[in-house]
Image (cartoon, rainbow, N blue to C red; front, side, top):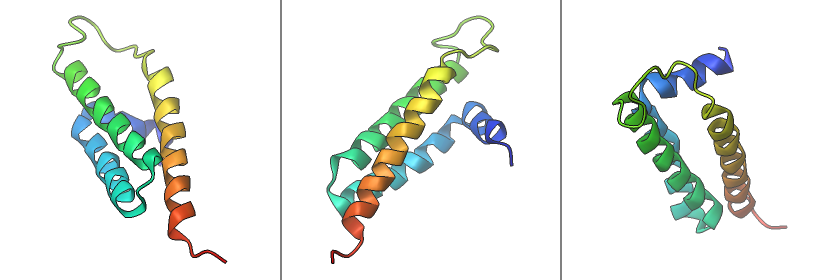
Length: 95
């Protein structure tokens, strides 16, 4: 599946952003690291933003060209990778 198709799902159905938010919240509860918490909050903020875009609260006109996503998606990806790394660093057994 193309990454553009996957990312497009978040635009069509913003509630899907709650899935990674929930996963990272779980990672935070298990690991007590701040990176997963920050990632969960970032995904929640993205959900609220995307929902406001869908409801035409933040965009009253033609919103077909979403230049804002050129910033948000890489930022969410970096934050998410850092959160996963922090989680697995704590969850693996120490030697």
